[in-house]
Length: 252
Image 1: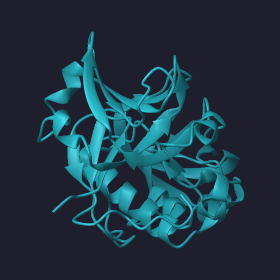
Image 2: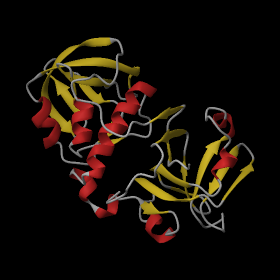
Image 3: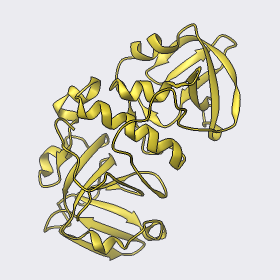
Image 4: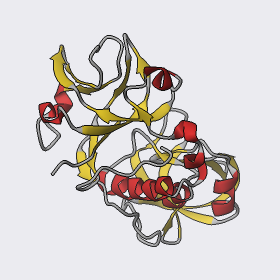
């Protein structure tokens, strides 16, 4: 029986649960950096601490207003757990945040105040983050209530082009899979020079539990930043499965 396949812009492969994990269950068990107090909120995923440091919450993008993060953490003691390299090029601490046992990222995602980032982190973390996001998307909460942010049809090139340079979800049936140079192209239209495609680097293809050629004729949901070469495309490196049926898509 066919399964819905979801590609996004990270590495490795995993199974995405159908429902979100309880907020009391930590999504990640990385090394604890320490506990800080949130003094001010810069944006929907970034805050300053009382000792002058800046923290960016890992694994999410926050297109919504910063008030959601303010309500969750301002003035509170927040435990930070290590994510990846620890800091970004601007010197900000990049971490998973917890108010007690409750994941800050999961709470933002479940309220529709954030979306999972293309580079979301380690597999146990991303599985929980995607589950939280899915719950909000299915309920059309927060940013998911905006029809423009809903899954776009891979057959509608004009609609996809409106999202050039932006995060988007693109859904459709793979008509063909071809290799060229160091990449594998999942083509969703008959004319690969103008229609939408998902691009997987050959060096990442072995990370999937099947050959990409097997995706011909199957429905696929691709998420990431829309780029433009000859036609619109998303560079896709991570795969998720949603179980036996394609996810019902209301608005995105």
